[in-house]
Length: 227
Image (cartoon, rainbow, N blue to C red; front, top):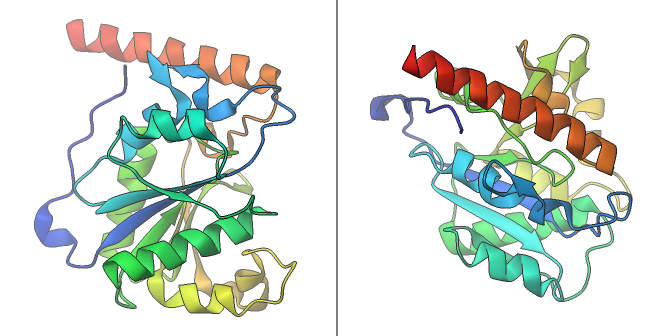
């Protein structure tokens, strides 16, 4: 059972925030579609979208392959906006650009708005992590906000909408992280003791380990409520 976190008071977020989930990968190392695997009584993707269903986040966009009909059918049960590529995106950056274009076309964000990127390789967000990131995002004026566990940066990453144009201008074959390699001052780090920000569900072993961890934590949370 997911921990329920109270939303940030409405007065704290005048700008809008959109979630973007690139989900056009083929889960080759997993051997099965990772976003459709069981998680917390539902699927990984539905669990993620439930976590993202907060008033601070205006809409969640999911970019999928055109022939991934099972994932599209699953997403039809949610409030997510599904963006089907015309052809399989060759890499995550292409999926991100497709999602950003959809957000621009549908919602016309201002430069002060923001978008939250959660790659399909890191599909699980603990509510307390999301709450901490959102509190920091709306309290400060960060261009890029990223959680950090120990010495490692994780996910999700929040971007100011003004950076969407700069992503499109990056040379082909270059990842999004080229933004802060060129301009390190763009990044604000949010320290956390939640190792989950580093979760990578690439293999069956990854999945079984983290699923067990989260189920154990959910049991402890439920017991604490009933004590």
